[in-house]
Length: 272
DNA sequence: TAGAAGGATCAATCAGCCCG
DNA sequence: CGGGCTGATTGATCCTTCTA
Image (tube, rainbow, N blue to C red):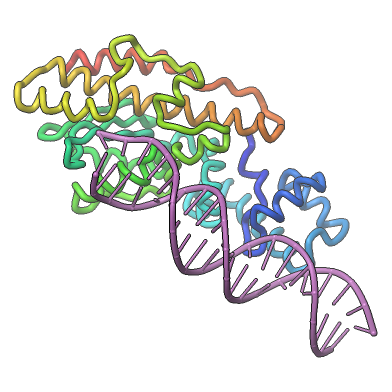
């Protein structure tokens, strides 16, 4: 799906309003605009010239896989459009915490696969792992997870782009928490994970930490990894649905299948 | 070309929301 | 609950266009 080249919000002077206006005039992509601007004035001489230059810059940055340059050209609100071009550089992550917002178990899925990090064991390796991915995906992570991690670590890495699904799902006319969204789009979880919620994570951690209950840790870890993994399904579903709602032509790319990764989850949990 | 009006973006403020 | 960012809202500013 080509989302990036359908936005014109690349310069000061073109916001959501002008963009909608261009779409309404039949200009949907950068190429459409370039053709129209070559024939006559589209917005104004000055804005046309600036937008043409910005489009050229964006094209060049795309060719170079230059995420930093692109993230500066496109307003943060539209950063989700970059995902399709940088799937290989994305990290999906979710944290569990104790009652004091101290991270206990953190799940990550990136190009290398899935990984779990736990306080008192492997949590110190988390910053290095996340630092490998310049694009982060989370649910409410810009509000909760990232600040909590920043508080827990002296020098925590920063992403170049952080896509927070909490706000993105509104593009697909959805609201609510991650679990609710999963239900709404028919994304399943195994029976023993149904009904487990964020607040249960606090209890499960205590049962492991104070009583050494290994089953509690297993359940907590599995729950956490499902949170992280399902982010990808929810994100891709949301993008697909957004395209559908806008009637953007969609080249049918199947939504990511979790199968192989779910097998890895079982292995990882059993190895605890 | 100059002045003014209209319209769109931008900046600041506020409440809502979802995380553990 | 406590935290804190996003998105909606409102007011201010900039740009463009119209008229003479």
